[in-house]
Image (cartoon, rainbow, N blue to C red; front, side, top):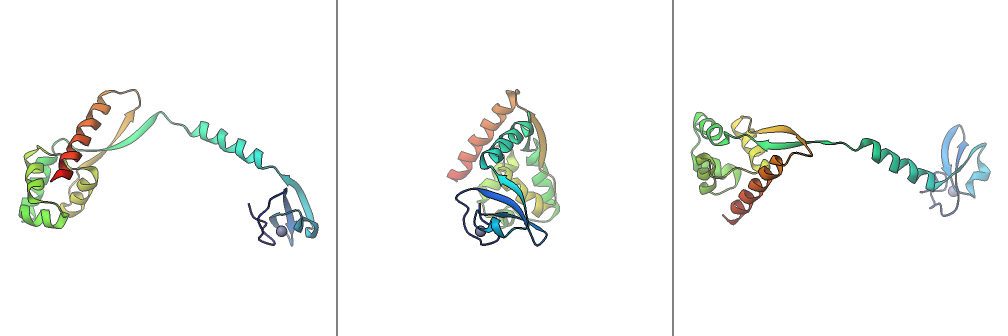
Length: 156
Ligand SMILES: [Zn+2]
């Protein structure tokens, strides 16, 4: 914390005070110049307030992004509609043609990041937001599949 009048680091006690009708946090030296002093600010009090806030904002639900199941068809149809070859799409995305081929065959799910790029280029919707309940175990399995695909994708 810094003194808002002299700008020095407050090592001792900080005070919330009024100087020229403005509320400032002051060090022990500058507080003598204040026209009004509300009182010392305890740093431990601030810590308590923070930990209380954290408990309240804790949530059970989590929104995750997932690539749609029929991504292969969506991508192939949109690409052909735009008159793009697989080579052209691969070049735009900065990936190998074999990656595009496998995505369109449905054997390789694009990562969320890649899916978002494809969405922007082909103007399609590939990623949906799913509200994940923390207790669900099926979701965890889906994540493992995605991570496996990412590993394969990077080896390319
Ligand atoms: Zn000061």
